[in-house]
Length: 335
Image (cartoon, rainbow, N blue to C red; front, side, top):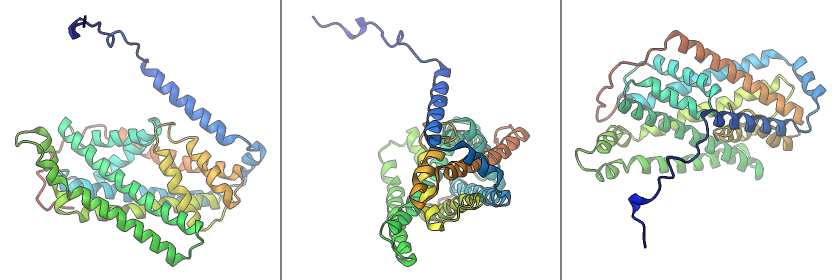
């Protein structure tokens, strides 16, 4: 005889749950394991010797470019957030962006920092949810630019294309990305029609309509992202020069975006191990020894740490939430 649903024992209440610290222990374990793999076969005397002979002027140049790239990324975020109801100054977005960079050091990958940015941009649940959408839009444009740059560089290297042909491949990929974005934002009104008038989801989606009315916002955000990703590759290239690694920028435009894309995966803390192992794997065909590749990764991480500490200092200087109320977005938006 069938048993009534209400008579079934509640197994979920007694189901074992992992303690809160177990996730952190797991991430630390994975991080250590990935770093051990990256260091496998590395000769320690050679690795330490690289740091002793490092030209730190190149590292400072790379760090300066990295800081400029973060400021540009914050401007891109402001460009996407202000038209849909966050009428704050660009300076505040830069401040919040660096705060997110700090928390990305402590949390798995950069996703944790994205959550903090959304949380700090508004002081209500609805506002933070909308802020999260701006962070997601910002992240998607960045990933799109990563794909365009890495794809064009990889195709160019694989087929030994010249500069003009490689740029042509990049433009074709960019055109495809822009078409997908325009198709996505152009469907917002159809999505809006799926919900009745008083539905909370309808009110939320309606705040995103400036993206549909001005799809060029997303297109220009992708353009900003191209600058950001190319700047990130230049930053790593400058750091590598300090270690005596002088490769064409086309190599860095292919390698750095791929490594950055892998670092988004929530498998290690701060991308440690993923960064170093990825560089060792991708730079080996270019003749870069494992010791130099790992050293580049560690110095790249150092630039991230120093930039994140700046964000931590900014957070200590201003820990109050952003109380300014959301403004009603104009039909056309305002960047």
